[in-house]
Length: 510
Image (cartoon, rainbow, N blue to C red; front, side):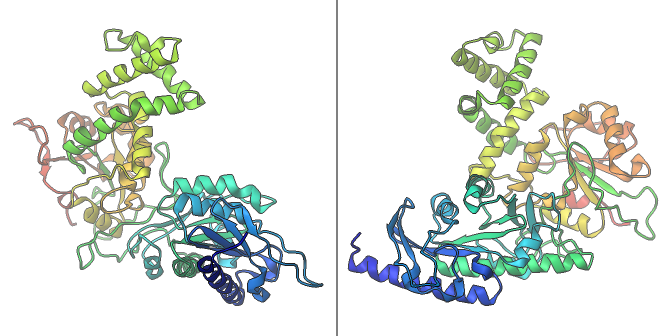
């Protein structure tokens, strides 16, 4: 293919840059033994380093030139022995994934030892996370107090076989600028070669920091205990997403409750929070979340209709429809005709939502839809401004915080993962939903207390806006505070519970 003068100049510069950068990366120990690689995009062309060559000794004439679809336009000429014939990088389809899915301007692949070891801090982890480290600021879209999370995918025998896993990781982690490959290395990209290089260097320092902090007994994925509730410019402390979140109502054994000297035995050791009307405005749930789920329901059903998970959920909806055939769409839900069944489910679920039914299957279905909305950026959780500073303060005091809501655990995790103040999941120790029992049943609170590791139920303090939840929690021996927020339903005139107007009032100093 004959390039224009402008294309020739751009590709020549990119070829020279790749040679210089790979030599630099070799000196850092990232591309030794012919490993690693790099590519740079120049308008509608891509310049890519070859595979299986000494990266520190490459020259511009060794580079491949590809079109934007990844087809080779210009092959480099073979160099005399002992050099091997040029071969397109095994990384090619993985580089193309970053160009296609992220609009990257440059992508690099490193075999850095720090990257390899970072994937083994927890050999079963599917992501790497750090927070409260200065070099996080070098990653696009991140600040010092943010969670810096990188997905980890499992290695394969050949690099090109990683493509599907890497593509899925890129889609699932829209904020990450890299993907780690266990026992292998890391792929990093940026809008330009300068940003890609900067981020590769910052990520490597973060990987090394996490490894060395681990040797000191410090978990880099958790906020510093000395971190302030807010920073000087008013930005929120956003915590860190770690791999030890409680699942299915189980606690994180690696975050023991700290016993404070001088505290009474029944001083709160665990905080449990409701969501609607407590940490998030009622209007956000009813005016944003519910309408979004209703709007997206039909397309979600159509897209996932043939999956095993959807078939299971449809069966659960059909079982609920049999219990109350008076609900709109109940009879159509069981139809063998797909279009009729989907139409019936849309009507049926819409009626359940209108009546604000607390059914587990309804909350599960909503949670799946909201998960897609949060991940795509269409939804951002609106929490009260006092919530994050209070949660950060509780962490610094050694208190654990959990959520107990009628919304599914997945929906809860999404809500706290995509807030206007950033990802707050690192400030939480776990999530409980109605699979632990109805919120109006004291036995539910008994069951949860058994999972929290406290000596007695009175060491748990619960914040809710509902008297119907406060009473059974108190019956179970929990401390309870009722939250009064704008837009909440009025509380009964006669009750014995403490009233708070802010989360910062919940845990009183001892």
